[in-house]
Length: 363
Image 1 (tube, rainbow, N blue to C red):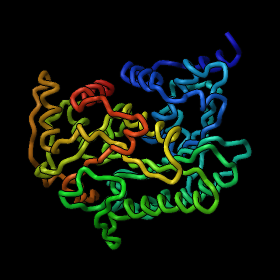
Image 2 (cartoon, rainbow, N blue to C red; image 1 turned 135 degrees about the vertical axis):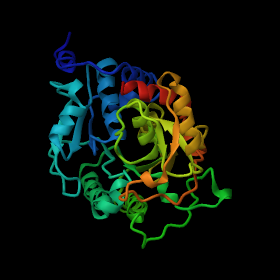
Image 3 (cartoon, rainbow, N blue to C red; image 1 turned 30 degrees about the horizontal axis):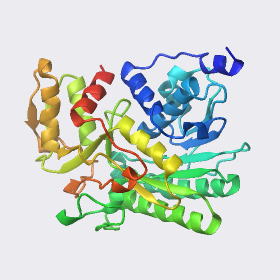
Image 4 (cartoon, one colour; image 1 turned 60 degrees about the horizontal axis):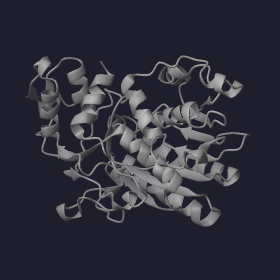
């Protein structure tokens, strides 16, 4: 075994079987993974739900595909202790480094950077009322500093994590929603701190691409769930999973009529890598499951049906909603994914199967 191979397997390697299966499936996809071999990737917000799986996918590829010439991941995080806990299965690995700082401050990095993934963002609705300044700062100031870093380092690709919320409120004829369709966002509503700053981040990516040649690409994730998601982040599907995991009746804090399209994590992560490695510069791509659409009420009943042994019920209690939670006014949210399908990506995990895996990963 080579020295590099030893270094990739020198620490704890225990991963949940659900995560192991997801990573193996991602690695088996027909993407140009060899492009990452020997390269350095900077991932901002690496502790976060979505980017953490991207980090794990690269480390898994190092173990199985690029072992003799592994990629290096620089995980930009704000909290070292939380990062060490999140990536505890990779202790002692030489292919994972931590850069502890606020993304809203310039990053001083001497080494070459070949890919930048900017995913640092406060996506939980709990923050939209309690910390709107912090919410928009990561999307604007953080994007500014990382785009300037990209201008200096000249990476092969810069991937910006936007959101399906950039579309705002749409009428029924505009859903499923294509990338060139936009609805109403009230800039004087404090909840708009997230959607408006994501819009600005996208415009910045296009501006830096146009003026400075930064190879920026944009993904717009829709509702994504899976192993590792925070069960206390205030999003309704997280609350529902937390209820099932903790043997509680599912509490409905609305009438449940809103419709959302739910995409399983491994599908979404493969979509992000597809855009990173195959997407066009200056373009935005929806990443979501257009076949995973159902009402919030139907989701609650689905989760109860998945675990009949727990004998749970769905309970209506709109008064239980946290006062810090700012409810979305969007009635239906579903992506048109024709554009990313043209790059060869297709979500395959059903809502039933995806939530089974998610709940099992917490048990």
